[in-house]
Length: 106
Image (cartoon, rainbow, N blue to C red):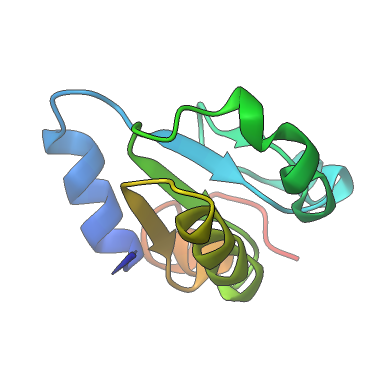
């Protein structure tokens, strides 16, 4: 698993030939407050049910509020055979502080 800071993720997204799946694992109420554009919401508690819908070979960036839940899910997905997992260190909170200063915070 890789760990990207918000700045590293922005650079990666800007230069990527194919866009990764941005997998947000927070709860729906959190996602409604703020989220990265083009992200897909699958709450942490639903990953074990919905992981079959995901491509194990697609680069996947796992996102949560501060990076703790996303790290746990990233490890879970790696153990489930996913090949290219990135954890957003600091989560959407760090993204809002470092990249998108207009993003709502909670």
